[in-house]
Image (cartoon, rainbow, N blue to C red):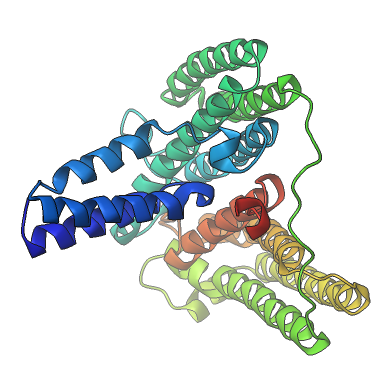
Length: 388
């Protein structure tokens, strides 16, 4: 390539390639490559050679080298292993959620015992969520392998055995899931396999890594004024109360509507016996009141610590809030179980579905749990001082 337009394109490509490099070497190589692109124009040489060279360098760069990462090799190993554990645990969350919420079995049939969505509008999600779980699992195993290669020979052997066992056991679990009679057993086996793989690979890599040096901690958090802390806590509390309220409306209104055909909410509740109606509504009210009170307790605790702490960061506050969200969403299904069974026994034909809002609500709970896991397990972002 020659001329202004190809040169500008080459400069943009080498900037993009440089952005994939670790911060320690990023600026230096960006300037070198841009200078090479400019020099190629003056010499009448194609600038595409610089682009290809930069791409090859980025792909083959040993990013674990201390002079490249800015960290001792042991710290790099542990950071990669923690990311692997976080991704594998997240894959468990998404994988289990995709089976419990419904979707398609490997043989193409509807999952027995699982709630299915009543509209085809969410069909892409029922297909994409298992793919997301698989991608998280593959990425997690890859991160653990990247850590094991720089840890020790024993870590590599352990990772190889765990990967082989995970692959074999996962295949057996999927074959069990293909059989309706063995669905609960297969589901339990799959969960056990994923958890075991995460623990074995991750903990083995951490255990067999060389002794760590003093870990890199981020610099002290900047001082946050009290009003800023209160604003963050109150905003999160409002969001948590919104989650509880949304779940209650779904159980009382949207869920019953999705489980019946051509009936209004008033007609649905009128068809139920007084005992069934009272018991179903009571369980939902208990769920909403319990989690509402718990959110207010979270507010009091967060306010107390935000006022007393000298160093305050948003990360632990958000993490604890995500745990509350995931737990509330998990128990929401059980709160609506009594009312759902009463509707199923009283008003035929029972469609056996959940509302669109309920499906998205459950996915939000899974996302909250996966986010909390990543915030707890995954390493913190490197401080600017370590990357300089």
